[in-house]
Amino acid sequence: MAVKSEQTRQKLADTALQMFREIGFEKTTMRAIAAEAGVSVGNAYYYFASKDDLVHELYVQVQEEHAATAARALEGSGSLTSRLGAVLHAGLDVMAPYHAFGADFVATAIRPTSPVNPFSEASTPAREASLAIFRQAVDGARPAVPRKLRADLPELLWLGYMGITLFWVYDTSPGQQRTRRLVDGAAPLMARGLALARLPGAAKVLDDILSLSRSIRS
Image 1: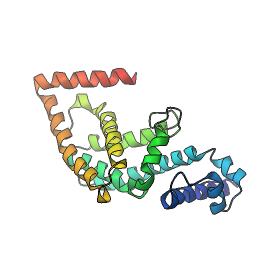
Image 2: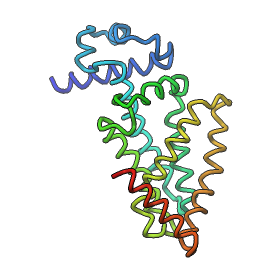
Image 3: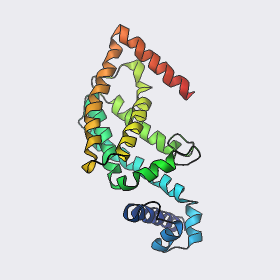
Image 4: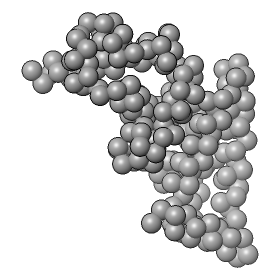
């Protein structure tokens, strides 16, 4: 019974994602999803209370795919620049099929009460999974990232990734190549900026940034 239940849930999620891509987010209703999946409307609502919950399912699946894709991309990457670029491009690769309704995703996620809000309690597992990707990129970098930055850097990079994702959503260039160029330019800039941690004067600025970051998270 548990296996069948999970299969039904996955069928609904897969059907919804396909319909989001093919006819758009607004035109995809819970009733239409249920009909396409071959289940009753009541059964559909049993697994997903609303389209927000289906978007949240997409968010979770994207993080899982990003983690797997990034792990492969990080193999053989040594410098922080190459590892950060690999992780960011992996994220764009995974999100690519969903670009058509990216703006709808943002409109859903921006509401403070939405389960898809990346800062919400409901999104904690997906957020932690994404943070783990950046932690892996930082921990495996050679030369090693300065010790005092290692604990905070993954979250700062994740916040940067959120900004890149928003840029990607509204990037209408073919294949979102402007976002790709942004990643290619931003990754080495971030890595060079971290090198300032070894310089006495600049290190104080980085310390202030880290202190500010910690204060708004507490």
